[in-house]
Image (cartoon, rainbow, N blue to C red; front, side, top):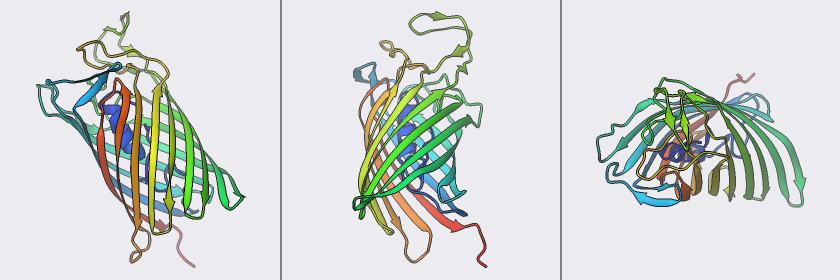
Amino acid sequence: MKFMSLYFYRCCIVVSFLLAVTQCAKAQTDADALMIPKNYFCAAAVYTHGSWDHYWEGTFKRDNPNLGTVSTNVYSLGGNYGLSNRINLLFMVPYVTTNASAGTLRGEKSFQDLTVSVKWMAVKEEIGRGLFSVHAIASGTLPLANYEADYLPLSVGLHSKNVALRALLNYQTGRFFVAGSGQYIRKDNITIDRNSYYTTEMHYTNEVQLPNATNFMFSSGYRSLKFNAEATFTKITSTSGFDIRKNDMPFPSNRMNTTAVGLILKYSLQSVSGLEFTAGGNYVLDGRNVGQTRSGYAGVYYVFSTKKEK
């Protein structure tokens, strides 16, 4: 399962981490057109590794010998339950570790944010030789631990409560499909462990207003009962924020833009009904105040009925 968590939403390593999570394990998730039938549950375990050694300071691409290579490991558990054939309830819990190969900054280890989503298939119609569907997805995130948000690029998250709305269109003919979605993410303010900070002006408060964001995804590929292959293109754009200043640390309210491509593969084991394996990767093509991340992931899923057969 892929868990949007969020999405996709963070600066530098955080945005890169979310790209990995939001595009990994693409099976019956909050960003695809696949649905779990009524009374069925899909349990998921996914491991993701991402790293970068170059990043964009504003629009200027550079490296930083004081950081070396920044890497992230994400261990996610989640599930998807079919409330009905047209409504699914999804959740995700990630445990995140970060590390820098150079310098004196130490990585962070913590549970990150619980993400819960409701996916509704509002339209399902035959058009021409194919099937057209429209989905509406509402998501929310809630921090699970008291991790430090003001510690970029090694923070595991931004400790913000978020809500997001996504619209998804999908058209499938035979075993081939094309899909597109648009999402708006509303982020709550956070508090940090200092009484003042400077962005483009001085702020005498410990409260930070995070920029909201949009997330557009386009995908196309092949779907069958046994094997899925999908290529993705994702663009995340902040609606406000400021650039990282020259040779300065990133800050939670930086403008964070990312353009990335990805590949998703899924195989269903025929000898064990309901058992699925998924793998893939993502690469950031362009960005603003984010790391140029390369990431890969692998996951295992098990779909089963929660209702006893009569």
